[in-house]
Length: 319
Image 1 (tube, rainbow, N blue to C red):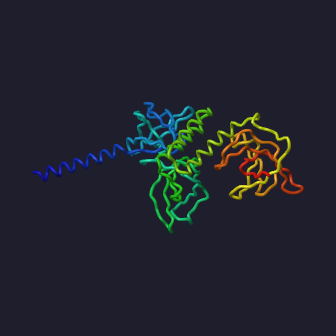
Image 2: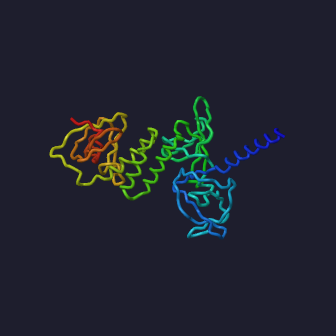
């Protein structure tokens, strides 16, 4: 009798564990601003709200259901959805925009895609740094670690599976949360809210690569605050030389800063002599260097058109 009872309780314990596991199943949204839809009571679903890529939802049933997708302009029949729960309410999410997983991950650097885990099987495509993915199996080939990633392909409008070098994938919750805040900031029009969101992201314990993404976005916000009143014309032009630590060409911009109003109008190579005719009253920090922006003129060689525009002062040596 005791043995039977032990078997009963063991089976009961296993059943509870499996039941808890089934209840804890989740799905991760992978499309930016993924729509959640509600049942309209007529066999269809309609838009209810949007969530950020990387959001984890409770998966109520791992088997997709077919519903009519109803929009303001048309109805598409028999679309596959997962039934999920979000903030205590039931919704539907398209299977082409989310995938069952326990957590999201993020691409930390621009990552080349591979169809199989080997360098010879690369594709002419990449995932940009900051892309939200789901990380799958890890495979080692020829001494290189690859990770299978699932991501939303905007061109094909579906979830795809490819491989990337493992070092370019972060499963850190802080990195994922920081990228989500960055995504939210990019959709906001109020600059103050954008700055608050980026500041919150910077307070997280992120990897150095994600910290760089945040800094770049913050610098873009800062750059867009420069106005015409911040520009100071020099009484006498100064001479400078293009010089950076990496030897790359330097972008010449139409306006000081890296905001949307500042367009790249040309490039200048290393050691180019420039004439500095104006500067900004405000300094900015780029690549850890604090400096103003300089308005410059340069002629690369006789007969060529002169280049004129703005260059970050950290890339110019002045005499």
